Image 1 (cartoon, rainbow, N blue to C red):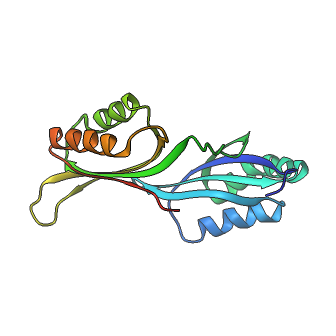
Image 2 (image 1 turned 90 degrees about the horizontal axis):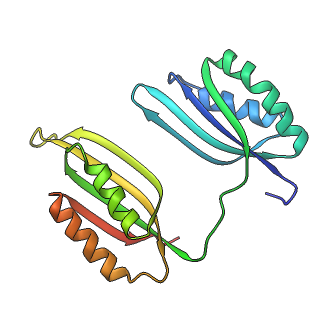
Length: 179
């Protein structure tokens, strides 16, 4: 990453198939782009990819021009937009929250309202419904990356979070990310 790099955010939605990621990354590389950040995951019966690609102005221009044709050739939907890299903020500490709970319609709303009320930013969130292989109960798993203000007392936040989990009949964990 250099100061002269430009950035392009690309979102892909496709039917999963072998070699799709390889073909997409090769097309990016052939046009002078470099993948800086990528999230690739199945969602339902589809595959999603969210990428930030860097390169000089000319390389990203070639990529922007080529993406509709690449999408047609590789049979996926694509959206793209110029962007900047994510800002780092030293006023926050990274935390991980994990919640496992019986399936309930407002679980995510309750969790997001709680963190919003604590001035905690939800930076990333992954959720999954599943059926317990042991009991057959419908369950929900939530994993979050949080940005907690450095002036917030960690133990008070953890205790409030555990109280929320108790109210939701959930098991939860809130720990700093050591990276």
